[in-house]
Image (tube, rainbow, N blue to C red; front, side, top):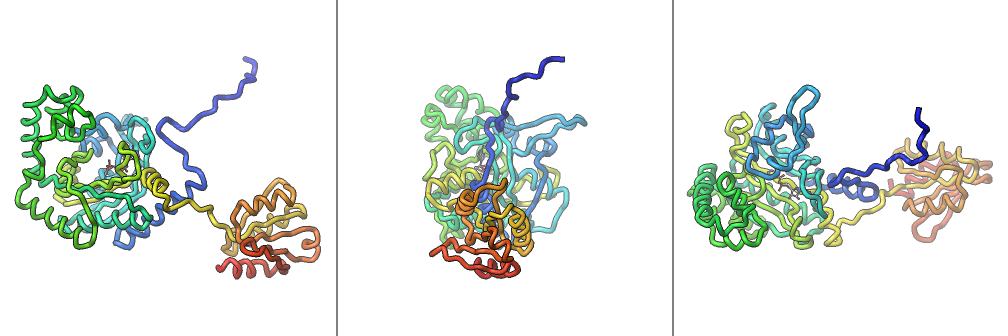
Amino acid sequence: MSEPSSRRPEAFKAPVGTRDVLPPESGRWQALVAAFAQHVGRAGYGLVQSPMFEEIGVFSRVGEGTDVVRKEMYDFLDKGDRHLALRPEGTASVVRAFVQHRPATPWKVWYAAPSFRYERPQAGRYRQHHQLGVEALGSADPDLDVEVIALLWDFYASLGLRQVELVLNSMGTTQDRRRYVDDLRSWLVGRIGELDPADAEKVEAHPMRVLDSKRPTTIAAIADAPAITDRLSDDAVAHFDRVKDGLTAVGVPFRLEPRLVRGLDYYTHTTFEFVSGALDAAQSTIGGGGRYDGLVESLGGPPTAGIGFGSGIERVLLTCDAEGVFAAGPAPIDVFVVDAAGGRHARDLTLELRRAGLAADRAFDGRSMKSQMKSADRSGAVLVAIVGDDEAAAGTVTVRHMDGDRSQTSVGRDDLVAHVRAAAGR
Ligand code: HAM
């Protein structure tokens, strides 16, 4: 047997591209999700929970041409040799669930869910990120496009965000899109020598990805590339006109961007992104989405229209920081119990207060009165309930009001719950 090592065991860190979310930041995270749930709940969206992993086909079917699916997916064989992948985005899983369960339409759902992409990590770009999203299936009505886009616009506004721009485009019908891809490919083939070699590689199989390029050589070469908006069929133009008119009518401003192709392959008709002017350009897109009228069919369901969005929680919170809104507050508690008579009173009183529905906390380890008072201060509690030897003997508690004049009253132990409830306004 080897000697036990005197060295400390290795201290692990969260994997590259992931983060721990600790209090108080986690409280703000919870508040954001709760605000979103309430906001979309008022518009008739119900929570959907789907697995964090799926058969790989669910995702490969939605974006064979995309980096998200080709390069960034966390896929693996499980112990039963099934080829699975961690969800890189929310839409495919929701559509798979729709096809499996065939709920009545329109089916309007929301989610707050982690997504996994093997990307190069940087501020605002993670390998595990979290999306707030909605999907609405079963209606091709352009008013639904307006509803979905306005829902996200109003959500950002409700957080206090002001520097958000909505960028809008239409990809047309599936046929329009297919025709455009052919036109674009021919156009790009004619200029292949002018493109950055990394983009030139994409022309044959995925010409639209070239429009996404951030490489200066390519950007210059494609300045006059054909735009999808010049190739739309009459139906697609009529749909897009209704969406634009609707957004204007409900007071949601937008900028048209014919080059907006989005990073996933399933989009038809309306596509959109919300860009924050308060973040660095590399991760300034805080939300995006669009219609995907062929996706349900491609996952084995009946022809069904669909539209939705996803918005990165991390990026939304970064934007809130940059704009100085939606600040993190300490989780408020009603009363902090300070026990200078041995600790048993704190044990019993905190439990009694919590059982009565109040928020109560205490210190441990027999700390001094002074140290307990410091913890009470830090806790942000409205009241401090103090039990010293005198109170313990008399069956009373001294209650100090931490706001305003810090006045104190003595209350009978049996009256503490009622007193705290009244003072904390509960
Ligand atoms: P997406 O544009 O790929 O769309 O992602 C949606 C949002 O997730 C982005 O706008 C961004 O805020 C955030 N996000 C994406 N990747 C990362 C990352 N690596 N780190 C941090 N945040 C990230 C979708 O995923 C579609 N499913 C949206 C959708 C729903 N379309 C229709 N319905």
